[in-house]
Amino acid sequence: MKPRVFVVQPIPEEGLRMLQAAAEVDVFQAERMISRDELIARVKRCDYLYTLGDTPIDAEVLDANPNLKGIAAMTMIPNVIDVAAMTKRKIPLTNIPHIITKTTCDLTVAIILGLACRLVEADRFTREGRFHQEQSMTFLWHSLPGKIAGFIGLGGIGRRNRHNRAILAKRRNEALYNPVQRSPVRCEACEFVAILLAKHPLRV
Image (cartoon, rainbow, N blue to C red; front, top):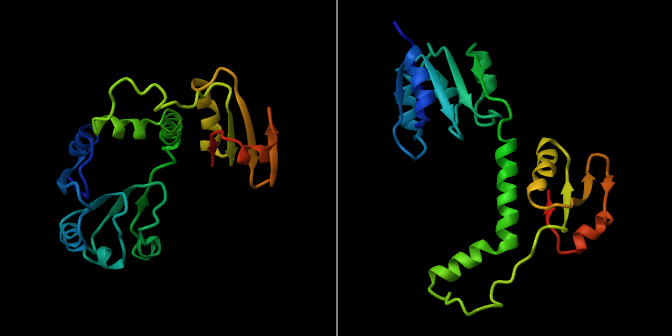
């Protein structure tokens, strides 16, 4: 008999098929977060719980099923799961590694481009029917090549963002600051303080 797995939110079909090959899968089919009462009711009928996002798992939820065999959390930090309560009940917990570095950096590039090109402002202007092609000075924007980008913090995301800047500018001017060392790590084209005073992209 296959184990019973309850999934608290819809997941991509590829992942669902993998689960269904190994278990009887019950998915909470809604775009909203599952309520506490709904969660407790479904936990009572499963062997394993597959949780996502910010669904709180505490002692009361765990006690709803004394035979719960494990929880798989699609989260990097199980901050809403009572790990101590799970340990006390000898229920194993798995989580995922830090996998959003690239996504975070891609969004950073999108934000920088959006701000430089005034995309949100221009979109609103156009949707309001105010664009008639004769406003030659209305949406002047900032060209990114040659601009100085400031980085505060040089962890995985900071280093990846430096790499991503290659698509924004032919000449990479940047000032880096590592708050752990409390001093500029490397400075090209300007001092770090100048980053705060000039109109250049600053990444924290």
